[in-house]
Image (tube, rainbow, N blue to C red; front, top):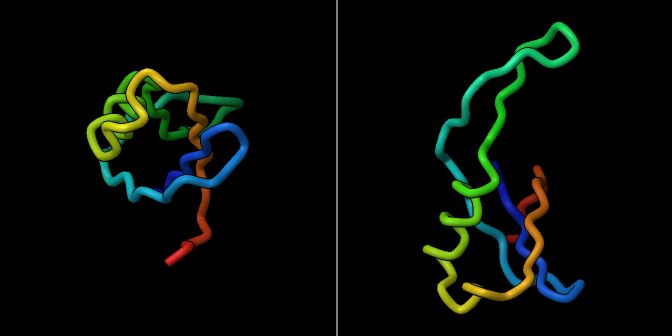
Length: 65
């Protein structure tokens, strides 16, 4: 899964997130769900300069590199 990291409406970087989430049933289908805190920890580990800033994470399938 690819994560686009945005800060103040501007694209900062794209990170590849390989960790598996947990499965839950949504509308009769099994869907993989990821914890917001785990994703925030991953982003702040990979990009420590974003720690404490108001960044947004967008899930995408489009590679930028």
